[in-house]
Length: 251
Image (tube, rainbow, N blue to C red; front, side, top):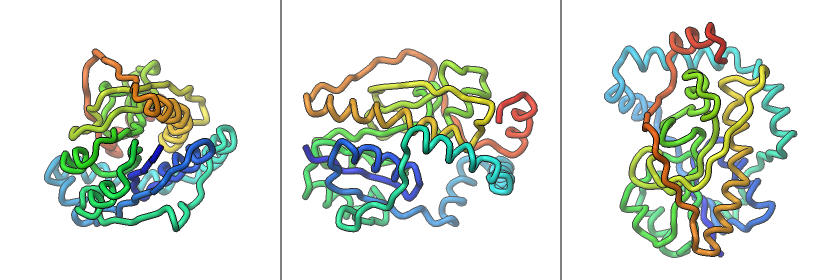
């Protein structure tokens, strides 16, 4: 079975890769470069407006200043779940400008994988998704469709919805986390956890779900689920939002 990963440059992608490599062979990792900050900021401003983006930037600065408080707990989670962060082998890595580039499509067609595992990329275009017959499977750190977008675990706690604080493995379509759900699981948050540690707990829960999806793919029987619930799209919190929620007890 040929498996290809389409990934961004984040740490979570390496965790997923190394987790799956314990039991499966990943034939190739296609890593896209990050969107230039100027372009990313311009898109964000056009979509959300200056006031909200400014608040989000302030939160990012605030979070970086106090990130040291999360390091010990993150290390604990890595050790507890055996999460490994190692670089991809050079011989199994191909870097591209974007997952939506012509080069990406050409590589996928040449390899003709049975399964494409996505993690941490920008939204993938229909052209790429339809370029091969293999399903594209994504890990979303949130329960979809209720908590689409980013920081699904955090927003579920803000909404006092602990039963939906978790992770989803789903088929990728052209929308934002709108693809058919395959598997979901929840995480247990402790007093030691916060905004920075939730994703590690979620990725730890996602790896077994991805392994089950690979087994399903071998049988050509994906576990497609029909989830009937409200659909919400979330973005990064602003500093004001975070501080207000922090007062309510959500870190």
